[in-house]
Image 1 (cartoon, rainbow, N blue to C red):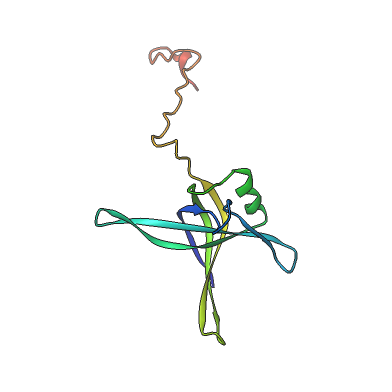
Image 2 (image 1 turned 120 degrees about the vertical axis):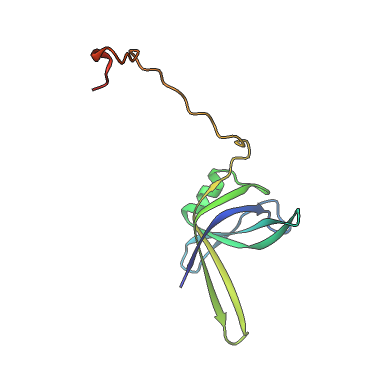
Length: 135
């Protein structure tokens, strides 16, 4: 059974490479990529990393990573992800698997919400004139 997850995560380069993507092809011919992500939480006035792991992106999500030009230290917002565990009885090890089905890149430039554009009506509204009513 999969547990759904969402959140904001920082993206890191693959160890020893100058890219975030560790692109692979499954035995069935499907393309996927593993990306190292982490998140931090503020504890006692300091930020401490509380999660680091590999997220798997399949098919269109790999293309989206490339199209958006996601690079090291960018922050992504996972809008739809699933977390599963698998247990290898012979090795007595539990593996956690994180799959991202949809995400967006967080825009670092937008720190203040933009002000909505105000559109002036073609004819000024006059509460005493029935002709200026919108209905």
